[in-house]
Structures are given as structure tokens and as C-alpha cells.
Amino acid sequence: EDQVTQSPEALRLQEGESSSLNCSYTVSGLRGLFWYRQDPGKGPEFLFTLYSAGEEKEKERLKATLTKKESFLHITAPKPEDSATYLCAVWGNTGFQKLVFGTGTRLLVSP
Amino acid sequence: DSGVTQTPKHLITATGQRVTLRCSPRSGDLSVYWYQQSLDQGLQFLIQYYNGEERAKGNILERFSAQQFPDLHSELNLSSLELGDSALYFCASSAPGGSTEAFFGQGTRLTVV
Image (tube, each protein chain N blue to C red):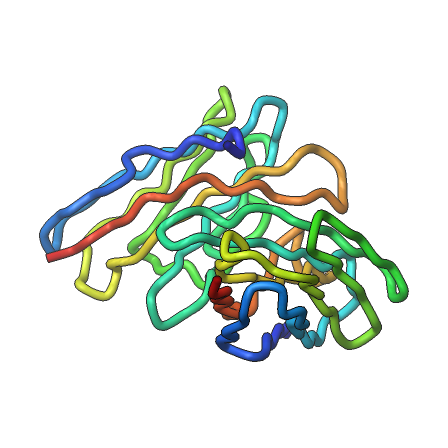
């Protein structure tokens, strides 16, 4: 069964203090790893898709990387508006584009 | 705005009742997915439809059912509601073809009292 574990559960940063979020996964044949951002009471907002180990993608202060066992979401010089829950999901060979989500990392960036 | 529309945004109903949640996917998307998000759990996959046909099923209760209509909108029906069914229900859609990202609606918050 596909599984996703995210750490830490919660992270508090000062504005400008860079850090990384971790997503460890086990999947029977990775077809895609997805990062989403979710604000309270809102739907997840798509950030990145990574398909193979070694792949990297960037968007503003965010950079996602992928290895065969885990993915990292690096946040460089975060701002208070980056505060949100960041979700990682995998799509494996067990289901037709069925995404298995982790429980997320709650990020709080203080000014 | 993801382009996925869900109605209603909020729903309060009593135990034992039945409700219908509606989802309109992004223009051109053929796949629709339903997810449940409770406070103590992450996003749980319920069911997926592709161009009107059921394609994948998750841990969806027998009291829950869904369908996708010819115009590609989808409905999730929840019956014999229990307090534990209170949650956020999200719909997502994706474009035809493999390896494409899913875009989520803003969700329906269901409260069972």
C-alpha cells in the first residue's frame, strides 16, 4: 500500500529564516509526486509535480526536490504569507491517478 | 481560482439525513475525484470518475455514492448521515492523459448535528 509521511508536523520560522520540509514515501512504482499548499478552510492549491529522482522545480521562494525515497520542499527567506499547510501526495501504479496524501506540515512564518 | 466549482460551500444537517454535494470540473477535464478531509485525518481518497465511468475507489462507505453525468459534473451522495461524517469534502479534476496534476475546488464543509 502506498504511504506518505511528512515531517515535521508543524514548523515555526522567523521571516527570512530558510528551512526544508520532508516527505518520505513508499510506493509501488512512482508515477508522480505532488506538492500542494492548503490555507485553512480552503482547497489544496497545486504547487509542483516531480516525476523522477533528481528532478527539481522552483517557484518563487519554493524549491522541490526528489530522490527515490523522499522529497524536500525548500523554503528560502520565507514571508508571513507563506504560512499554510504544505501537503505531499504520491501517485503510484496501484490506482488510476489516485493520490495518496500525507498529513501535511503546518508552517507558520512570523514577521 | 482553480476552475473547479463546488456547491454548496456549507451544509448543516441532522443525523440520518441524506445530502448531495455537487462538483463542476475545470473546462476540458474528464477526471473527477472526491476526497474527505477530517480534523484528525489527512485527505482521504473516496472515488474517481473518468468521462462518466467509475475508475478507482478508495475507502468510501457503502452509505456514500457518486456519479458523473454526461456534462461531466459530478455529485457525491451521502446518506444515513452520522456525526462522524462531519468533514470537508473536496472535489478535484484533472486533464485527460496520464501524469497530470489534480486541481481542487474550495470544498463543501458538512456539519452533521
